[in-house]
Length: 164
Image (tube, rainbow, N blue to C red; front, top):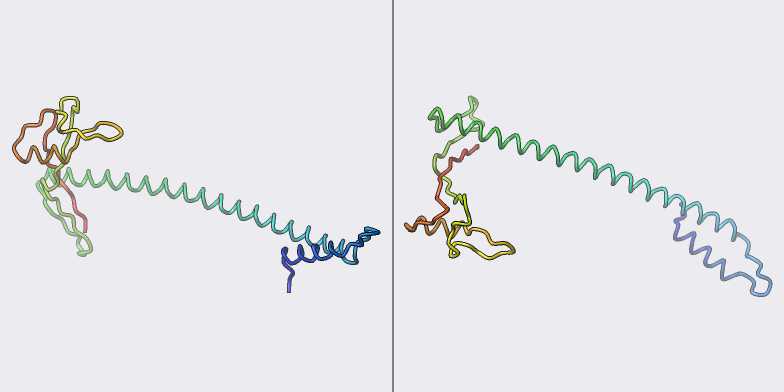
């Protein structure tokens, strides 16, 4: 059984209590016990450094993988727009793979969002207070759908491509 650092340190503490108060003579085995503590402490310190180095390597790898994830997501988004625009241009509403493992459906005009091109033109009723003043697109959308004219904003419909 190997002795642990805390066990070696406890042995040194016990031996320190056995020092002769009159002569200051150290008990037998004190130097060996102290040397064992130093050896164990060095091993623990080396492990800490090794562990920190491993953590740094893993962290660097995570950063590299995060970059790859972002690049892959950006590429997929570009390809999604590419497929959407060409399906729309050709009037194709859906496609299926030959083996039936996936399909793509172009849902024309499905998604709605408010596009604000000049928030300075918007009446204050359509602004919400946050740390900064910005258009309340939910309120603007409701107003436009209810038939109100909202200067500086319009309701636009966008296509959505659904991959299954």
